Length: 125
Ligand code: FES
Image 1: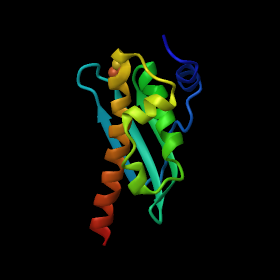
Image 2 (image 1 turned 45 degrees about the vertical axis):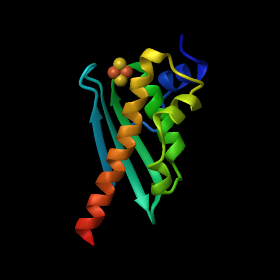
Image 3 (image 1 turned 90 degrees about the vertical axis):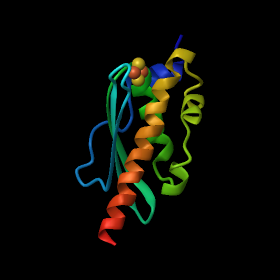
């Protein structure tokens, strides 16, 4: 029921781990299934130069966070904010309907990490 791309990103997730000197960190969870996703961003001149994630969750959550990190790496922060869970799911050649909510976690984790970055900028500036 999963596409090959989902299986690939699930069994061989890209960009896993943490970034020690990340300047944007976001953590989100889904109350229903209890899955948690943490996203680390390294942003320089408003470009996401590095991104890593840790996901304690289902296969679809791992595959979508992996794909999301691949998609936003090298992006401008403002463009990364426009990333939708639908776009992530499409990049994975689709997700079963019951698993769409897992991709929402990926979108929310990216947004939470960017928000954290903006908040830190405000404090510094
Ligand atoms: Fe919880 Fe997929 S079942 S994120």
